[in-house]
Image 1 (cartoon, rainbow, N blue to C red):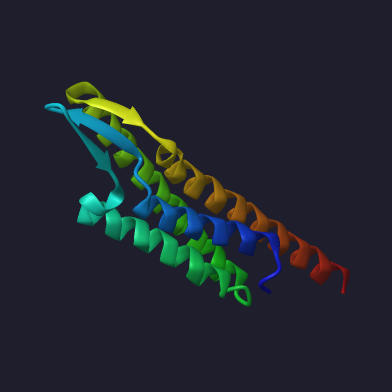
Image 2 (tube, rainbow, N blue to C red):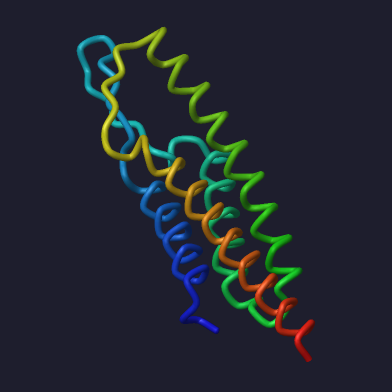
Length: 137
């Protein structure tokens, strides 16, 4: 069912990933030139964001098999956490080496992780609800 709350959370996670690819997350002042940083500058980073967004979209349509959907979202949480750690490490290195001024795009990986976590909680709630109804039969 597309109208469940976890579908909205997964859609928001996918949207945050797509926006993060194109939105600059900071500017570096290097040798007097301002360089806008975005995810398209690093192909591995870009591919990982596309993978996370694709897993979120695929998870929306796995509503008939909640256990598989929970596994997909759990894998997505793991990938989002790894992406966030790598992102924080990269930002920390740029702050140390260059003059980095962050912009709004910095918080989007955190939103991706948060929306995936909220979707997992929603799927878990549905699974518990179905189990409780099965006990009543």
